[in-house]
Each structure stands twice: as structure tokens, then as C-alpha cells.
Amino acid sequence: MLVRLIYASRVHPDLTPSDIDHILAHSQANNARDGVTGALCYTGGVFLQCLEGGRKAVNEVYHRIAGDPRHTEPALLSFSEIVAREFGDWAMGYVAHTADNRALFLKYCPLPQFDPYTMSAASIEALLQELMGVARWRSPR
Image 1 (spheres, rainbow, N blue to C red):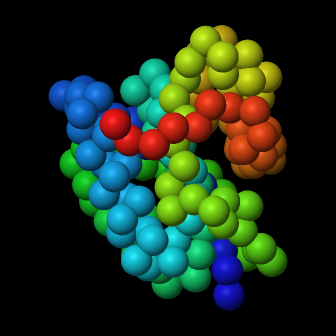
Image 2 (cartoon, rainbow, N blue to C red):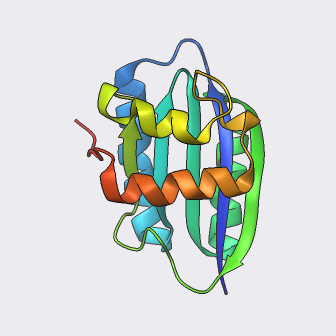
């Protein structure tokens, strides 16, 4: 059975851009090994992440993240069974809040700054869908 889990967490204030790159590279390697795919958005000190894969593997990844001190206030925003993966080609795609993506984040968020804690699960899923087509995704440095 395939599932999709979407969560948000606040970034520990001491995290550096190099730490973000390390998290992304580590996630890509572990997820490829475990059959987990997904996307990570980072902006304004907040992570929004979508994980897809087998129920056991996705839950294990989420529990590791929730226990990681680099993440604070983890919140499960959506969990559902899925027929197919949306991010099947990415062990972990990454998009940052850039000038190019700002309007897209604002389109789905009720606040002027991006805050997934204030968004509905439907808005978050629509944002992720749209990000797949138009946002500037990047690999770690």
C-alpha cells in the first residue's frame, strides 16, 4: 500500500544553509534506499515536506524527523492512502522560497508570509501539485 504524508516543522534557529544541504543530501540517499519519494519546501524558517511510499517506510521517516532536534513543532498536516506517487522521480525534490516562487506560495496561503500551519490539507496538496510544474527545483550544492 502506498501512502502520502505531509508535515510541517519549524527549523531550529541555529540551522545554516549548509545544514539544509546536508539534510537534503542525507534524505535523498536514505529515501532512495527505502523507496520513499517526495518533495521538501523550505522558506521563512519552515519546512513543508511530502513523503510518499510504503506505509511502514514513510512512517519510519516521519518519526525520525519528528525526533530530530533540528526540527521543532512538527505537525502532521495530511496522511492518506494513494494510488500512485506524484513525486515518483524524486528521492527528495527541493524548492526554496525565491522571488520566482513567491506568488505561487501566496496563492495558497492565507497569510502574506508562507505558513503551512495555517493552510488546509487541500491547499497544501494543490500547492505541491503546482510546484511540480512551475517552481524552480534544485539539487543540494
